[in-house]
Length: 116
Image (cartoon, rainbow, N blue to C red; front, top):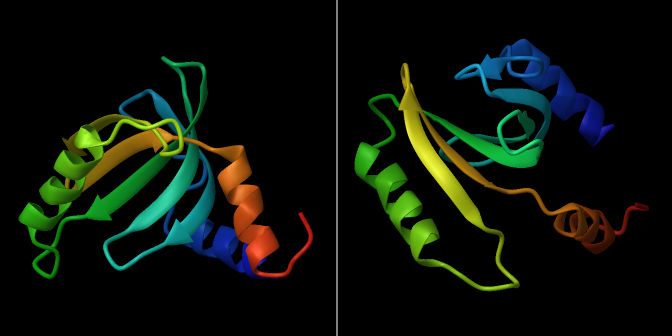
């Protein structure tokens, strides 16, 4: 039910199926946070699924906050932390591209007491 609701919101906001920079094709929504939405997307250049975090830059979201997250992610390098790939601005949004971790997604379901 929760997954269906997320998919509905993704379609509602025009994200699923959307291609960004003629490179990232949004496949599904993974979650929503205080600054934006995280989606699984196919990266045509890397030829694999990545996480695309989109932050819509408006008056309520300071650009400095999204820059801080990007700087923090670039400084992290550990086998147990997802890898930061890149970040960029496009139109009125800021995007962060990080490694997609299937095990992490499965662990979220397990900790919620749901079946995988």
